[in-house]
Image (tube, rainbow, N blue to C red; front, top):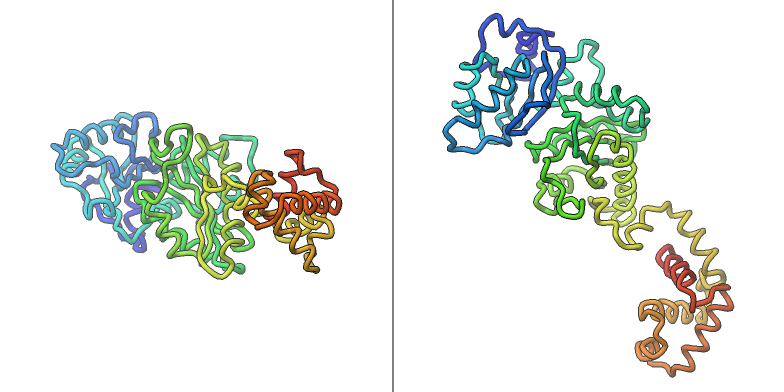
Length: 376
């Protein structure tokens, strides 16, 4: 495909801001997305460059635009497609720089996603994002295949990345893909590709900003990432992975996002919940993602007769166990909380140990029983 062919795709509604005949006849050999102020090293010869203009600061004197476009020309880029979403329109200084350096400039309207542009570039018409997601799930040994899929989707081959998995429930994968795409558009500065998998999952690979990782390697997403709010409005349940530094970590990120999604479903089966993998730092949320039948089986094996809680005495022992563990094994504080004599607490704990076969003086047995209570 050539640059002028892309301009003829009516559904994209692209606008040529500057470009002469020979420039529009150039062949597009690939596509990459970047919002780095200095794209040197991220663009290859013959590539079409997509940018959300997150690097542009309103009111600057144009030197920033000139540096960006100069780097594109040195790299051999065939054209620049700039999104109008960040600033409402493409800055005039960028038009001037493209004219000066001989780079065709095309405006991408707010209602056209970069994903739509990259899919229009594929000669065979197959969804590029679906293939990328399938590769992420398959964890190919050949990293070149994954890099090629990322570039085809308009994503840089350098991280960090995060993966988002969302579902509308049932097998409505197409609806989930559309909803997740719209939600991710709330963060125009972070390139992404959304594909679907059998079973109704929508999976997004998002290239995070280079400074998205805070001290200690933890993501600084928080509520500052507007997509989290948008996700809650767009899809009932979604899981967001932690950041992974490179493409080879995308398979692991997919596993994290799926587990976070399972926790979201468990915590709010009839509501809306978005869970980040970074939020799973206590046993409660962690176990919530374990299938319910597995949790029940584990709890039954560990608690033994207490798991059924059918009798008043068993319910009383369960309450004592919960308070005893919450009080870090303190006999006196447990007795105070339950308004019992310490000797009564000793007797009940002995009964619990006999019925469960666990020794509450051992840390590992305490952890087993705490986990069993959480899994009920």
